[in-house]
Length: 115
Image (cartoon, rainbow, N blue to C red):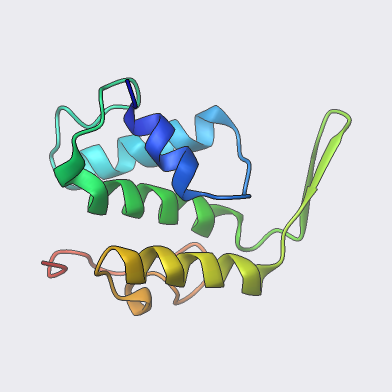
């Protein structure tokens, strides 16, 4: 069974983040769009791919401003242009406008008119 957590993690591609970061993004999408069944451990429903994409973009936006992060003995480095490129791909694949997400660092524009 694929869960929403699994799908968001897959959308992130090579960008590994903590489980908490993914779950936090899923919670934000659940609250913003009033989706009671959109929880990290719930089985993925194919009609909700846009919401999965938005959760993945939330995660990617949260790391855009960091060049690198060190947790314990593990260090991760990110390139902001590559992250922006991944956000653009996710948007294109899901019929979303990258302009809604790629504004100021860590800022997501109003998504009420996305459909």
